[in-house]
Length: 197
Image 1 (tube, rainbow, N blue to C red):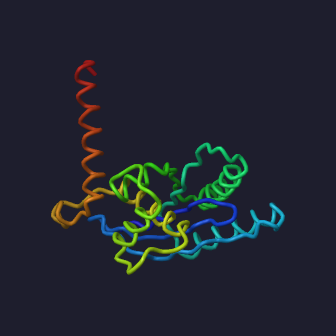
Image 2: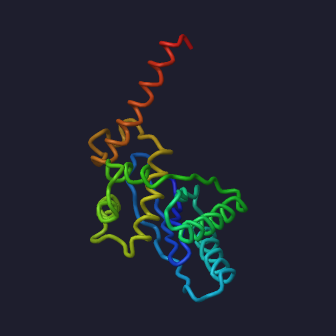
Image 3: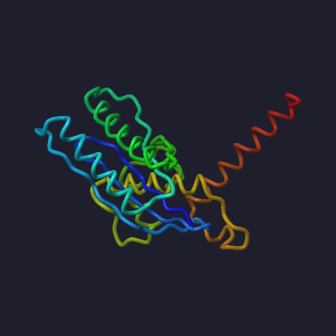
């Protein structure tokens, strides 16, 4: 069993989701919330509120790892700056507590959850609800995205236990992710053989 805390960084809304994932990759919801800050609050106070919220979640739920969305370039520089600042707070909170941190791109997370790297937010939210056995997807999207990050990291880090549930115990998205990992490994091995390494 691994417990992962996912962070969907943002200055106005910062999603925080915690999941537990068993060795057979079955996931369950532990906690989900969104840390909000008003746009008219001074920037330094917004950052203090986000840092406090992330730190409190880490201290309360004691994750084995923290997964944060990797910040990527956007046309809106102001938005990406806020996202990067919130992401930095998450990295600092985890590192200062000696908790391993991983960064995952949105495409990685979408592929892990839905089997499709260009899935939209609604598809991701629907799959998060299905994977966690929830009646409906957590809202707003920042909450679902944080949970998706946590699930993605746990699935990438963990490996199924032989005889635990077999391939039949994996969702279609989990099977697609496993098969993609195997094909990458096979291609790398073939390339190494061709190069004589």
